[in-house]
Length: 112
Length: 111
Image 1 (cartoon, rainbow over the protein chains, first blue to last red):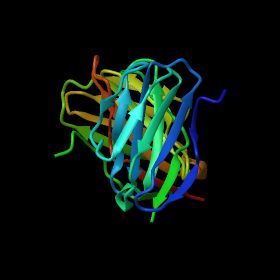
Image 2 (image 1 turned 180 degrees about the vertical axis):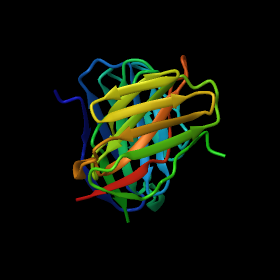
Image 3 (image 1 turned 90 degrees about the horizontal axis):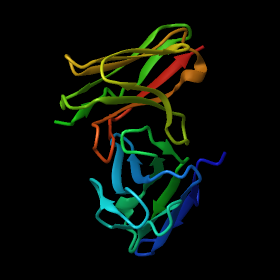
């Protein structure tokens, strides 16, 4: 049982570079989420999706874009990375919004 | 004021102690309540899921919801060093599209 898989696990970028974080789930869940977790800030929702082909903004969407072209995949893009985006990024999925979310093990991203 | 308040700790207790972790919230419409455990360098994993008020027990863990006080608790009995982790509360409303998380409490159980 893979559950939620995030790729890559670690990455170091230079300011201004772009990259895409991939999240894949094998549970046939409708809902998928991207969070960032920073010390003292808890989990903050970046973007989410309520089904294939849909996306919506969370509380900290600026500087990020997402796509959900396939039900099992949710991509998070940074077009021009900034040091303020140094964080641990978590992807999660759930069958319905009120059900618990299943999390991946995170991507640790450092931007120099 | 945050919708969900959780003391970040850190909280340090001796092995075998009873641990009480708490969250308060401001939105009386919250109906579904969760506790997650997060080990260092791992993603959060679900511990307990409860609906509305009352208690739910699972092994050494008990989740308690008091909707009249807008207060939820997680009790850990006979705490073990392996319980050392960050514990996050989360809650939501029927029809809402996302969860609201507390900040997390860092817990250390000392052998």
